[in-house]
Amino acid sequence: MRPLLFLLLFLVLHTSAQTTENMRLFLLIGQSNMAGRGKVTPADQQTHPRIFTLDPSNAWVPAKDPLHFDKPKVAGVGLASEFARRAAAKDPSAVIGLIPCAFGGTSLDQWAPGSALYTNAVARARLALQNGRLAGILWHQGEADSAPQKTATYPARFAAMIARLRADLSAPDAPVLVGELGHFRPASLPFNQMLPSLPAAVPRCALVSAADLGHGGDALHFSADALRAFGARYFDALESLNP
Image (cartoon, rainbow, N blue to C red; front, side, top):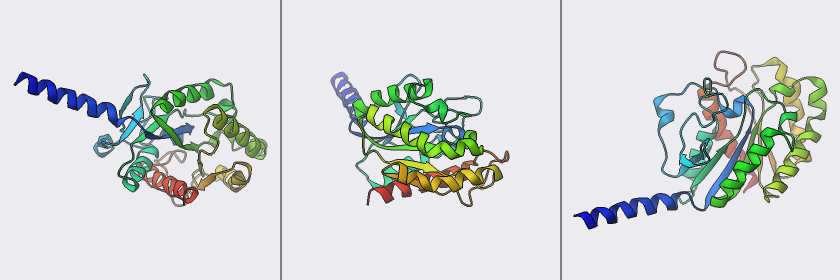
């Protein structure tokens, strides 16, 4: 029986090693609504055999919420888990790799090339690229840039950051998905009105509507249900760029 057990162990390990090769990789960046602050339920802890995430030690592990670890005491359900489930369902042969790098409360300037957040995201993405190709950049940020003077310069600053990010990751055509801020927050209106100008500044960029998505009680962060719906909309946006 011992040789059989060794054979079974080899097959299990070999299969596990194969699962994280040739992945479709998605970089998750922005602030808290990308990191996710939704309430985690047991269903959010269920893993999928073809969805992995790069953990804090840069190891691939089965993905489950919370994916992010920016602020462990408040990290929760985000939009990327449902996005990944949709991507896996669309292509039964695809293995999905998520690269969580978002950090709550951060401004676009804190994501500028050369910053700690940018440098960390590039380093983690480059490690991930050893196991696949960059299939998309998911961005949600703006609450920290809602002031009129920041909104006015946002398209140019965002375009410069994305251009450098694509260059640093040797992914010039990587799709970029940008979500609206919550409509439940009145201060978000000018920022959301600015967002339609981004696709003209950033090639292969699609916007994701946040219409009718509710908050979790603080009028700032989307609820878990809203984030699951948002994730589905992010996937639809990706599909619109890849007809």
